[in-house]
Length: 147
Image 1 (tube, rainbow, N blue to C red):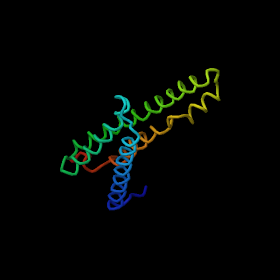
Image 2: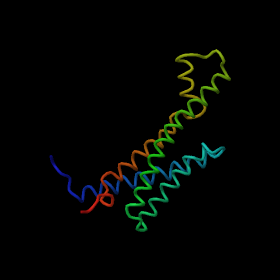
Image 3: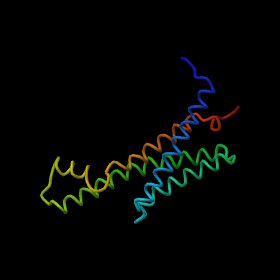
Image 4: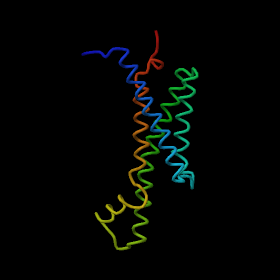
């Protein structure tokens, strides 16, 4: 097995962090611009994105392993919120399509719901950000126990 040099791992970890921060800030801004704030379910991704950035700020201020553990927890919540959001967006589109076309069934209903008024796959962004954040913390030196 070939080992990657420590400097390369640091560079990869930094790149993952930069990509995560850009994605989180961009996604948060887009959600705000779209008015994704009508109810608690719509606020969930915004709160999670804010919490993730807060944990990273805490980390940069010397938060140590605790800040990374909080960040990991928020990333798991991002994954779950993304999966739930996929279901909520899709179900909302199903209801809308059935209201517009009550006789729609089967694949036609599925397809119209997938391509409907609400972007059905957009919450997948939260899943991607959650995975990216977890990749950033994978075997992070601050989380490795020292004996």
